[in-house]
Length: 466
Image 1 (cartoon, rainbow, N blue to C red):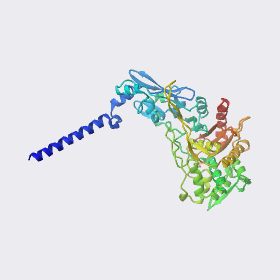
Image 2 (image 1 turned 90 degrees about the horizontal axis):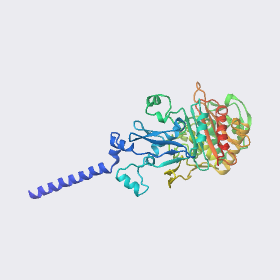
Image 3 (image 1 turned 90 degrees about the vertical axis):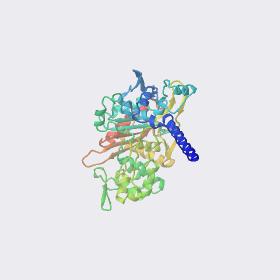
Image 4 (image 1 turned 180 degrees about the vertical axis):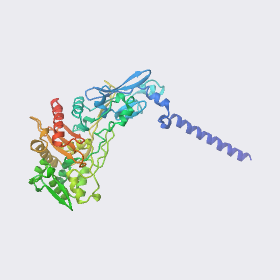
């Protein structure tokens, strides 16, 4: 009997001991309670922390904290213009955009810069988050925002040599300062919270012909001088691929067809490539995967080779079909050609650290993909120059500076106006900026998007971009 009682007591004591350890861990070390939405103490603690500033490349303050009644509130001096970059931070609506993805730095979580930080955290003293300096240039962001007035669309500008994002504008948008007061109005409006630059998915139109051309040149099935028949329509298994306005352009080389954006010729190129090689070329440029980025990014997509018949292959090569891309993805495609076929990972965070203090973390350019060869990128650059000099993108031309570009007019319904695209880079012989301009139901790319691209290039080059 004594033995049984002893064993029972040992079991009970052991059970209580394990329970105490589990409760202690859950209360003191586990994030489960701290992160629970109903834990108001954690929420109050977070809003007692002065979040770090979000700064533009030139030091312009994009987000800062103000203390009111012992609680810090977020203030966005530039409002709507940078909402697609900053996102918002609200005690009732949570975090969004960079305010969410960079919260561990901005809110002084999960790191200790010094013994003082460790001590302050342990003693629950007030702490201040780290400042984050971005790669965004306020002049380009403001210009892009202004150029999108009256449109639904996006502009993405980046440095093709590094992947640094210089502008990322999306309209329509919302004022992050009013996220609590006007929440119902914002969420009930069509697409105010959608960041079209990184999350909008659209057919690429003729801008995709860059990908088709790269696949054809890399595989050796075509050269810039190869001749094709540019008839008004091309029959493909009982269906037809047609040129814009059903125009017969006669015999053209691939380079000339690129400048004139001839659908029937690029349908032939796509059929010569075949679905596997066409899809592989697209994947090398990044389609089918989300580029690593500090903001949420939708994954651009292209159908699998096995799901494509010849009609779909032909239309996919033209930029129609079921292919969907983001403006960020198209800016990366432009940057790949500008950077001798190499795609760098896009990034928007430059440095993390206290203002006028040692840098805690800095961003370095990192290669993301080898999209095409150096030789192919040179050949496509020449074709893109011809687009601006004598083709569909003449409205993007600058005096004294060579621009390389490609227009796109993406149809998505007989009753709707087409989407307008322009992607390109400048100066063409020494690229410093690559962009994508997208306008929902904007009309023809050469008429609507190209003039906007010209003004972005003009602003960037005129302000002495290095």
